[in-house]
View 1: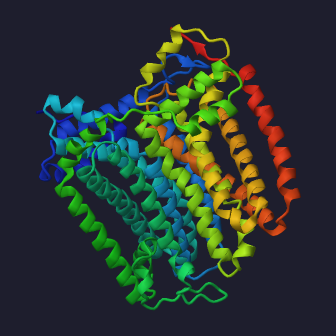
View 2: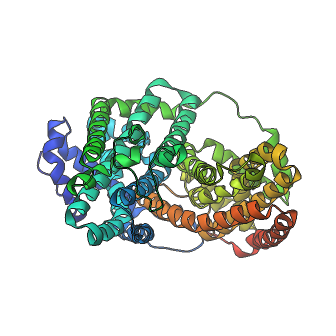
View 3: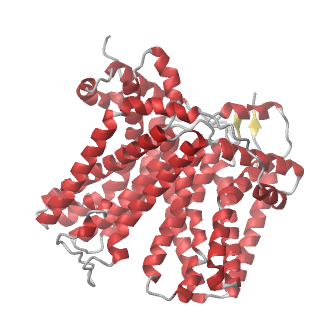
Length: 555
């Protein structure tokens, strides 16, 4: 077969030709599949004519450039924190922990559905494409988007390290960042492979979500291990010990500081241990996954299995639909949103980890700050932790635009409905009631024995703030597009990751202010005053939907 002619932006694939052929991959088929996927992403439109404005198809390169700039801005914020004069090991630990968290969060929330897409095999296997070739093409596409994300997040900090410590340290930090990304990517692939191998049906889909959330918890705890255990010799200038300590082994993000320390000639025994851990563990995971890469594609067929279990209407669904909908028409749209969220597996993969971060990350930080306080004094702070869910709300709302079967919503081309805003409002409220309110209710019940009625007022305040953010994000992120009418592609994943990082950063400031003020004041007046103000804003936003949202339902 003649050599495939690749577009200019994909000629980097030729660098992989020799290695892929030695691994048993048909390079020509591989290159054609990758080129086709990028072409489809470039041609993706705003849906099936169900939008609020007409828009030309977006070039995937332009979309990636925009996302790169947004992530570069986020990386710039991290770089500003590195300007604080700290020892190199402390700087690298801080940089790698943040980079690991942000990269891992974007990978699991925005690219897991592309990694676990079972449709490719149905299309390409009948055309003689081997499973190993298809798997390599899938990972190359996802890897390209992840590399762009990593570069944008890491480059500003590498510039700061260059000015402070010179080119050798920066070279080591860059190698550590690449190793970090490869480790996170291969670790997730290997664990996905295990779950796909040993589970079926609904247990498989639930297991994938548990794996993602569990991985996030373990990695964040690993980065916080020195602080949580108080095992590090940290004095007033944050000079972390450079002697060999056992807790460096489970503190996974710290491993990737090893190459920079090694090339910088600092703490050579510790640097050698950390570099060895990063290289050996990553290589072992890569070897273990590569041996079963073809089986990964076969196991993905399990995700197409439908459950025979009948989905019954829960009491929670009936109660929230009665309380949160104003008209029978809106109740119908609420039911539509609820049912779509139940059936959309990819939505769960992209959103559930992000919402879990919203509870886990503030919880870890709060526990590290108030661990020496008596439970009675710490209780008021814990009552407000549910507000951390705001971190994941932008991602949750953004992904309401996508569906595995967007053509199903073309029904609305033919069925006239006068108030388009009610449909979006019903879907957004269904999402909030299904994904957010149960967490808030659980936190309120857990803290009720320690805080009494104050736990309930804090819970009401958190619920109102989350509702306000959901409705605002609905207007901004989905307001011009009928829900569930877009096909999810790699550039959309990059865009969603950038949106998630920006809104998470802004939200974190709001969350810190609310939790700290609520914990220190410990006052009903604080809760009720903020509840009235946020309630008014929520009501005005909720009321604006029917008048402000209109879709051009073109045929």
